[in-house]
Amino acid sequence: MERSRGERFASQRVPLTWEIPVAVAVFTVLMVMLIPLGVQAVVGWVVAGEFAWPAGRLGGAVLGLLHGQFAVGLPVHVAGRMPADGVMWVLAIVGEGIVLGAALVVGLWMRDVMGGTRVRHGLATSALSADALGLPRLRRSAAVIRPDLYARRRPWSGPRCVRRGGPFR
Image (cartoon, rainbow, N blue to C red; front, side):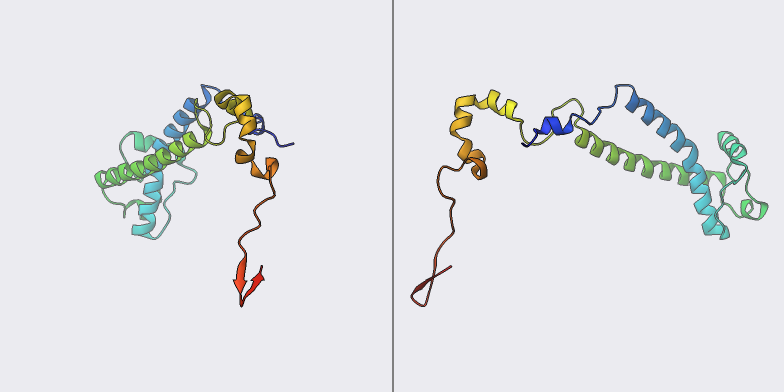
């Protein structure tokens, strides 16, 4: 016997009320700190031909960003070819906007998929249908609702085609 939609999704846990805001806050903090470094790495690749990630010096690079300076913790030959800090901050803000827009699109998609506090999209369960239509009307309309299960007459066999005067199926 087929399970109702509610029974199929009953095994999926709905996140607690504090989990999603904490996840969003942690994601935001990580992105605010890592996107300027990512922009710096891509700009270093474009201007110096080397992916400029501060390997082994990530703490110093983050502290340099907090002081408003890019290229902290990078090799000297890459740091000398980087653009001015003002240009780098504009590029970092553009990168933050792109990631924020993508995160917003993903968040709206997740809200539609999870349904939030609303009833999930889709067909009504049998209990909701019985409440809305009433059980007698639901039983009378069973052949219309599920003709594959409750057909009262022989299923339609399709049109008969006539070809050269004789029936053809």
